[in-house]
Image (cartoon, rainbow, N blue to C red; front, top):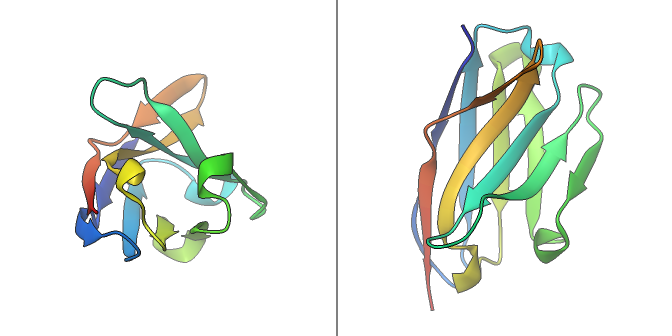
Length: 115
């Protein structure tokens, strides 16, 4: 069974930084693309960033230049470095992967950015 567990959320001021982590187990982490999504109250879950097994990255426009997705395959861990945070970044952040036709999600970690 695939398990994903996010950590690192919390409260930050606008302009501040947070670093999210996602620990993965139950899969060959190195060969799987990994993604971050977020969901703000009253909104649908939205894509934030992705990283391929080879390290290629892409981001939604609203976080380009501020967020950095990375991975350490030897630690089965995914990261999201979030800099220059804005109040509109407030959301629950989830990591995600797809394996054998199934989508897997963590429980999420809350990020709150005050103005």
